[in-house]
Length: 172
Ligand code: NI
Image: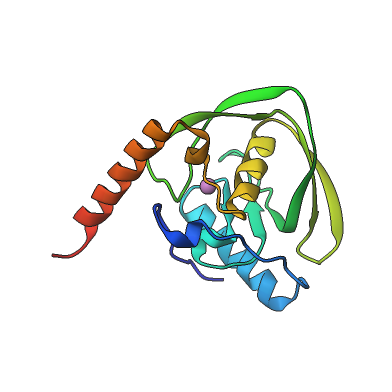
């Protein structure tokens, strides 16, 4: 396993439409393992492949608390196949939008269909934080970030601050 660099917005690699995984083989499992290790290192609860520069529809997620045993979920080609009419407003952040948080409204519960780490088709009914996390990560696969749910003014303020931080971080 290896730690990969997490891409920070604004970056065109975060805006791609990722490609379906043809088969969950050793290479895809390695990608999932690298993503999970990178996510844990960054103290995140979810990560999508485009965030480390891959163009595959792969997501990892673990919403267990720090004092609980890890509960990693590996998903290839995840799809929301059902969403509740009931909505939930919750504060979100993103490893690609560091240090910025905002409330986003999403369906409270979803049903996700995906291939697991062994390539087996599965369905998952997600509620609460897991539901929010999976919806957020699946949107990354189509180039959507949580800040795209905000007003243009709010989004532009965040992107401007991120650009400024990146400029300051560059060596002179
Ligand atoms: Ni994110």
